[in-house]
Image 1 (cartoon, rainbow, N blue to C red):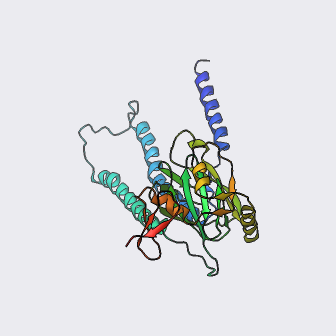
Image 2: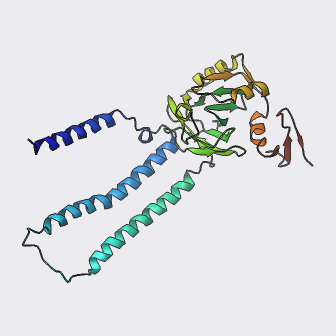
Image 3: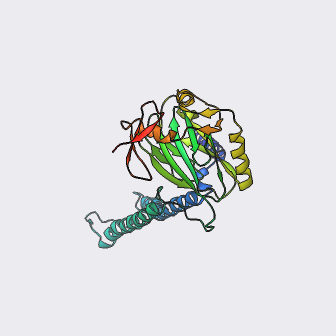
Length: 308
């Protein structure tokens, strides 16, 4: 009975682990956009290449342990043996080839998946959607400058249309991530970065904060809605129907720390709000995108003028 009990415990533990893993949703392996698909292909390729080395090594370890066990009198016994050119070539040559293979493909993929690199679509008529993202404690603010609207903890995009994200933080360092669309990117106060994504299928995709940022980190989530063109326009109209306006005063209230902040819509946004958020951490200075001149933002975020 004492010999059987450990086997039973091991079997039950293994079965329980399998059942728990069965409830997991491996979103990284279920991409819904070209960037996510490219990242999945890279992960699968790298894992497969490494398994080509790992599996034979595991098998060889078991074979050697069995063949050269102390009770096997038929195995060759060579106590003075210490070198084999063939074995040295195998144990050093194969890993070097593997590392070179992985290094090449990782280097190429990193440049192809550069978050600053715009996505190319076949239809020239498809207009990219511009979204400004601000990480707050503990919520996400999305500003659509072309539409003049803003949302909290929910964003939308048309299917098969590139989305040009410009991101910053008005709190601690954070990380923006929509796993099924790909490419997480870090955001910091006073700095802005870019990210280009696209959804190839309609759906409601989970967006998360992927960098610990305090008490409300685990609830700092948002919905990324990929909609067909008609549904996307309906969503835009729904946001524009809101009675709320995001100005300096309302933004100050929104920026106050909150946990599990509900989805919120703003039908209008102060012009230049995103730029002002970035500028207030840089002594009130920000570069104008069109002229290249330095623009001074007032500390109260109510106006700006060009510095000569």
